[in-house]
Image (cartoon, rainbow, N blue to C red; front, side, top):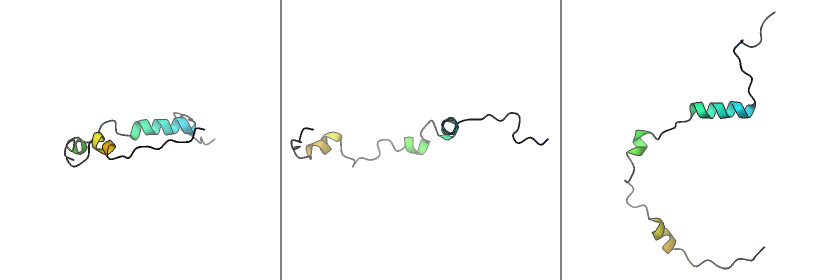
Length: 63
């Protein structure tokens, strides 16, 4: 009789399979090229600059 699956095959749910694949394939660290870019965007505004340019929020209807 022909075997359909190898003996070491483990049956996983789709969620378990996706979780295992994600954990195995995703990088756990930033590439050096990205790390080297830290601090190089001098023209990017600070959060205080962004917030200072916002207008006063209007009162919203209570639900």
